[in-house]
Amino acid sequence: MQLWTNGKTHILVTGRGLARLAAQRTIHRFPPPAPGKRDVEPPFPLFLAVLDDDGTELVFGRPDGWASAKLGKQGFRVEEHTAELPLALASLGGENAVALVAEPHAAGGLRAVLKRARVSHSKGIELLDASSLPKAKRITWWKDAIWEAGDVPWPEDDIDDLDFSELAIADTRAELGKLRLRVTPHGVTATSTRSGIVAVWDRETLAPKFAIRIPTQDEAEIFAHATSEGVFAVLTIEGRDSAMLHSSPEGKLLAKRHKMGRDAAYMLGDPLVIGNEAYLTHAETAAKTYRVGLPDLSAKASKEFEGDKTHILYHGVSVDSGAALVAYGDPAAAPQKWELAVVRPGEKKLAVEELIIPDFRSLSLGVGEGGPKRMEGPPALGLANKERAWRTNLGEPLTLAFDIPSNGGPSTGLFFELSGDVLKNGLLKPVEIKLGEVTAPFQGSGASWKVELPQVPIEAAFAAANPRTKQIFPQSNTKLSAQVRFESVAKGQGLLMVRVGPLAATGRSGSAMDGRTVTIG
Image (cartoon, rainbow, N blue to C red; front, top):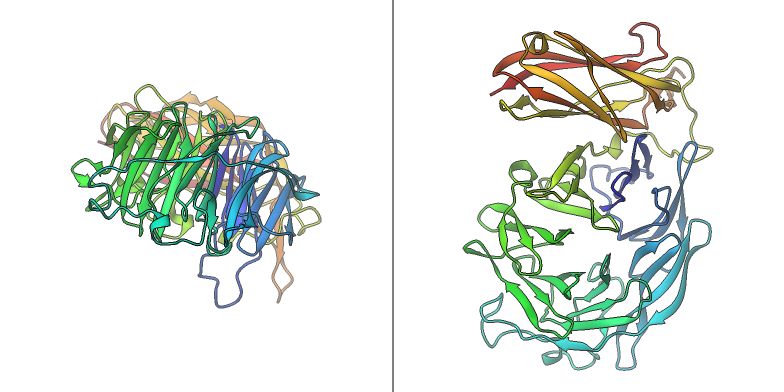
């Protein structure tokens, strides 16, 4: 899964489709897997580069090639490309990008070279001038971190047919995912699992800044982020033993850590670095996500990611590091069962805004220009909330997230109505609704509250036909995402009913309702 955000608009690309999550959701599904493989999750994209500030044009790598997507009036238009796939690609803003490409090396084998690139939906990926690699300084590994003393592996001790001063690779296909490229406010960072190099270039000029080398071996993973002090790196071998370090440009260890609490660090993945902190999921006896401070690598259990939210799986961080789009959940579960949220730095903890992750399996095929027919006639909306229980504690807010699919024709404007005993008896008080970038307060009293959002566009649903009867029926492809916030006033239980409908409809036609018992403990 590849994620991108600018703090307001969010892009999500999976093996089944892509989505742009903003005030108006736009979702595109890729052609389904071959018969007999529909329950098998397609491979996730290898990279994502967004080419504008609002997420309307992008390119992404797939195992069998790469594709570009451009947003039109009827959704994303996706084009497949057969040009050679870079090993990695990252956006520098607009059409400017940076890529890692494979080239033969005089000492044998292949190496990865960093090149400036120009990317567009129409012209594809154009590779430009190459940047030289900084000379790597071999760091001093510390005792008891992953390996026993005397057993620390350096690639040159076992393999003598490659130049390990380079971003070495054995085979381009085998090494996809073994070379990583990351752009942060402090530089462009590349890592090579085969040679153990962590290299940093200047973000604006791509001039080489510095590089370090850390121990590595087969089945290792290296993740790194340039920082204001140097580079922060995480090493995990064989999907188990892990360590992290913060190095200066000269290769001096500013901080190091190979334990989380009393346990040895285990199964650490790609750290979520936002502001001056990193968040990593440690999975030993019981999974737990830790908040790690930079530059000192101080670690304490995170309050933002715990319980069902423990495993941070994928993330994308905004250019200014002020927001991140995060997918979390059970690593063994299907992606549509994961959770999605926007997180932002706060004084004491991250601010977390829950989103609804699209289920690409239930959407109609193709939403590009010239795509399937749209529904005509009056608008109609659906309403869905996938939380098992509506509950909160006294004094804490309750936020309910709803998916609102279009099931009819096009329109503009919708309403939300709230009713039920939990409101009538004063246990809950409605505060506001947030739909994309639109936020509005509820008006009302007692058991009846309402808010109208007259400017929100409602796209027509896509039209599908029953092959036997030829009857046309809606097959929703675009969904709005709404969060309704309440204040808890008193302990107790009561029924809450939520209704949504288009303002252009007559009465309650085209509206939908959901209702459950709310518990305030």
